[in-house]
Length: 400
Ligand code: PLP
Image (cartoon, rainbow, N blue to C red; front, side):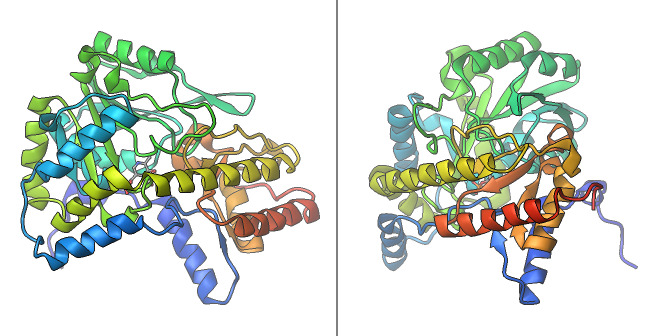
């Protein structure tokens, strides 16, 4: 017998998405042909300029510790990118480089939250927020979303109802994983008003900020006004924009006194994010936009395909994603839950999707399709889904 784990470690749940992945891997190992719509990462290679820059940095011996706030040249490149492409003016003292958005979110939680603080998570939300909040002993408070005509609406009044004197922060994510929705300026202003009224932090996950389509435009809540910026930490990364998920490079944007605390926490957590990746990230932010534009055009065509194919499934309602590479359809109640449907898709059709309940209880009737995969595979997967729906009349009920 060894001593007990910490209470926090014991209370930490596994991820439903990782669980589904393992099930799919086990089926694939038994020879089942799997089509994967579960994965939340680009299927493109990282931009060539970034790869070359990383190799060059290594060859030139730039593999040493750097400042825990991040390389000065990278922090400058981040400021230039944010001000030009996101219309969000920031200066280097407001930037802390992290190991991906995960790294950004976890140091933010450690900087802003104490044990017992409550954090509002508007549904549907990316599941790991819950665990990131719990890891610092704070309490995630899911706020059910309202579905109108198959579409999740953003309801600030519901946030207000769930706010208590112990509420310390709201987490928002636009463009949203899993819905692909982009919050409007009016919605962001309403969130900001609530944060000011109740003296809350806003934690803004903007990891999909560059992946928006048609006329949609990403707006950072922090850029609304200096008062809002003073209570906001943006957590974001290069993972999705540049197809650099495994490089683990992200950053926080925060008021200088918060950035100071974040960089101290970063230091004792990591010392610094990987140095040669930081050199490459500065190059990507300056020079990789033609490749990002190409990826964005490809995602947009895939999005249209997915929306078209979902539209052929009887009774399934889908909001057209304005950003990200996810669609989040709602299935008819008669088909059982999103989880039951996802389980049947995997075991009977070999198609991996994510069940809606991973994004909050109010999303239990949904499932998430990632279109970060080729059109050929998207068509193959949807052919299988159509066959399953057609041959079984309707999928069985029950949460299998
Ligand atoms: N935030 C959201 C909403 C995500 O979907 C993801 C990844 O799927 C992340 C953060 C984490 O991304 P990374 O740590 O690679 O930047």
